[in-house]
Image (cartoon, rainbow, N blue to C red; front, side, top):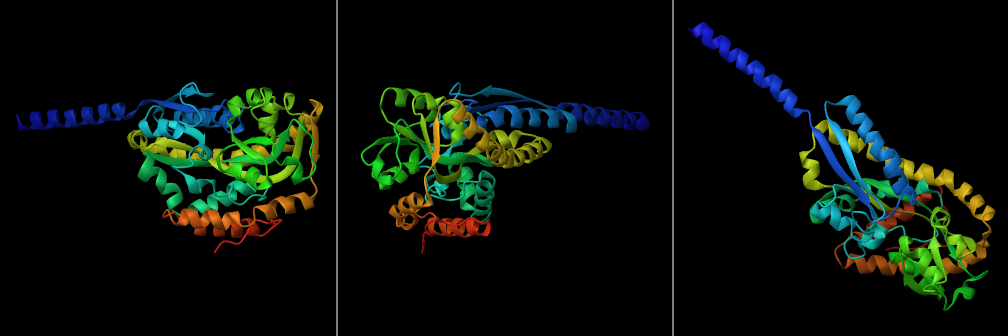
Length: 356
């Protein structure tokens, strides 16, 4: 009888173990979204790199299956509501610009506070990653305040100025209504222009109806959103390639994912981060050539114009650092690190900003 009971118990353990293994194989659904459409490079890479790579690697290397429910172009969240969408769990993974979170993430636009930085998005994302790695606050604030993990940084291409009028010197912009997003409106203000807050989904209509006469914009935005139809003049100013977007995942949803799936998502997210730099860098000359073929007038300003514009902003980084330091943020540390890291990566500032 004892032997029979022991045998039955052993069989039960084997059955429990095997069924437990089966139970651990999960069909995982993840909602991924952005307020921007796939015409934006980073959203295109979410759709055509991040999603298929995670799906493929999870299927190949684990017992699980991941299915993404995708919602881009405002289908699930608007451009200014994506952080909150991830925070509340409306979506599981979101891609968005920190420019739309000036109150929640004021320091995460630190490269914007140092205009005329590198125009190379590969260098930009490396610079940003170095700062995030050295200043823990930059990543932890997402976890501590907004119920999400930052899993990738996202580089933009180099920012220039597109307009529906021709200009050649900073004085030509005085009094002109020009659009930007968030903190880069200060670049316009210091140049004497009238800054207007905008977002890419409404940029075409904004220019068409005269809400503004131009935009601080990278070339992919000018091409993909057909802004050249409303503003035929695209001028290379060289404000810099800015890394101020991110890909985040809801903290509670993340905690429920199997560890091997978490590992694959982290892996693909870092590859995605690097790809936002390389993809944008390779695309830049092609997009400039495409603009010309579409009838845009493309030109570059001389270095003297960059120096003049940078000089008008010379005191702003220190002013901004002091303002954010008073809010308890490590702003001076971040800006000094960014200045130094840019130089280590080979960048020469037209005007070397000083931050105490």
